[in-house]
Image (tube, rainbow, N blue to C red):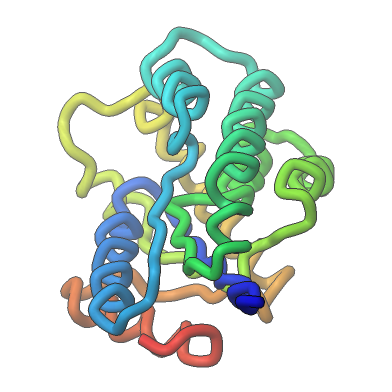
Length: 208
């Protein structure tokens, strides 16, 4: 009988829009694939038919209240975990997430004033207790992150500077809360310099 594959690793990239997390996720995916690791890169919200529809509503729709906004992110996440994340991990793949429940805690919790404890408790049910093995929070001053954003900002990117200052502070508070799982990385510098910080922060989790 063939042995079942070892459970895969779950890694997440977090930070403000414009911090470079998507760029670093793709760089890591290429390095892992070159080393023979089976990788699945996914984004939140998205990755499923429902998730992409929710993403379009959240980023390009009209006004949405804080509670409804948070629950829409959770609904998309529940579908992504059921259809993609958990099956991939069970098959031994390394899953790279562009955002996770920590974004919900920072953006809708710290940013919009919803209770962070309640968000994390709900997230535990949504992800069925399978939290990331490591979360890399790319830290960039909000004014620098916003300067990197392209023209035509989405519904959330159009929020004011005070909002993003609260989100940035929220991410740092989450790192302080869970230092074993979350690592704060300086997102300034060249992509190569940031990639070296990413590799160092993952050295005890996955070989890159």
